[in-house]
Length: 240
Image (tube, rainbow, N blue to C red; front, side, top):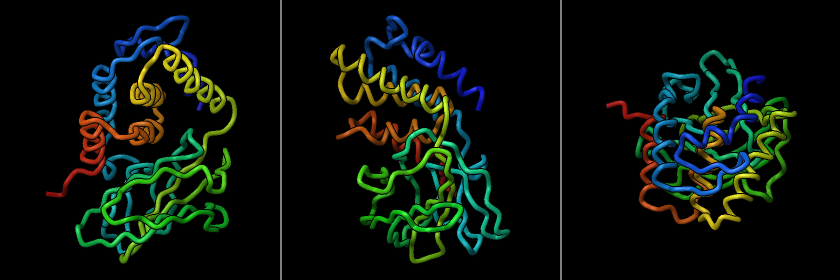
């Protein structure tokens, strides 16, 4: 994770390339169209889940649900856990895409990887394909690996993740908060603040954290909804 420290040190400077003004290392204004375009470019750099290190498989070996965030999966055919995705947020976004229209999603569960104890579960309304880990759920611990699974009427989808720990985490904490503080002072909208934070995290190669801030936008505009649609089609392309 040494490269992440280097990214964090230069993180906000990279926002210059996004068309943002920077004062004393801090973003001082934000422009949604320019940020959105930069985010589109970052999303396009990521391979589909079944071509990269992510993806999801059911127990039968037939892909029924595509895991988008977090994306490191387990191959249940050989009962082997792949390396968990390291993410920054301790309130992660869980995002998935059903591969078939008749799949009945029942709930989402988060388990500790070492004990397989369920520490949180939530029912999923029909047609919903994401949820952000709520603040009233048991805290997720830095350095600990977790499993998340979507429970359905067919074999489950499972994937693994781990919360970033140490100095890297503290540095990113400070940068994300600094973006919020400065842009709030400059009168930026909540959407611009969230998208600027997403851009920063994406440039740190923290893809799932970038996606979280895109999906955390309240009452998303058409451009943000288009960005969300692009995420699904990029990470989980149609088999047709």
